[in-house]
Image 1 (tube, protein in one colour):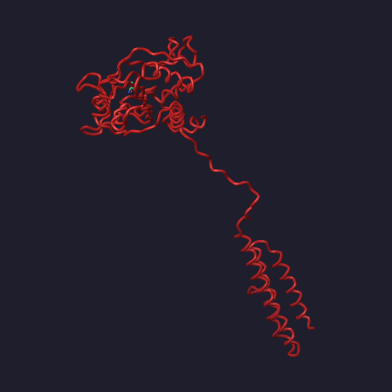
Image 2 (tube, helix red, strand yellow):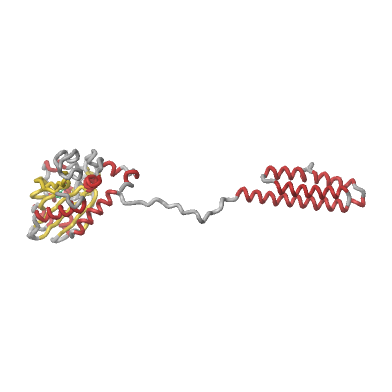
Length: 337
Ligand code: PHE
């Protein structure tokens, strides 16, 4: 074996070690240039084959060709392996726990509405609904509000057209229900209501539940019994109620219903302004004037009705100082319930 052939073989071995040791594209390129670049060691050695004695050339030439091919191949493979490693994505760890998406929940208003309706359903009432956009007829006229009577000023109405308005209370559902059903009628009607009002205890959009019971022999005692059952279930088992004389065009007699203060239990505090009582809802015996509008005049029935503010009930039950908390969609607030 010629000395050149030996040098070629030694250089091949060195080149393979250098390529194998390179850990970066840069290192790999340096090794390539060092051995098979234009002035690389193996290239120089293979050029030297031409100056060997003729007899030694074939063996040395073959060794040089083999060495060059092997180094090119080794370089190509090392480059591919390195690229594959660089572009590899981190593996999927199937033992990692999954990510939970946060669970949604019912808004406090929806929950309170469902709870209130549930209590009345257990007492035998059926839940019905009515439109939020109403006519003057259902919101006022058929509820015995005289045309141009100042009682309409009690409610700051939002009008949306000539004869169309956003209902100022859920009481129009009393009329719509009696138009459709013959007595006995036992319904509650929850929903949104609207008034031009905006302060810490009033929102332009708020919620009410209307109650209506019309049947033979209904008295004010039934009204008081039903509302007392509601108060003790919704607030606490010892919640007392009281009825105060009031006025609504669609009930006669009318009563404002108070509950014993949720904070002091009736002793008097800042929340109840020392009175021991908190106003909860408006109610009364259905004014017979309504029966003429709905075709009940010959039914020989009596009834009671009430209208309860859901937002107000939630504020009292959970001690919320400001109605706006209910409408700001701040999850830090809402998630407490
Ligand atoms: N609609 C009345 C209000 O919004 C409440 C009410 C309902 C009073 C039913 C009596 C009977 O103030």
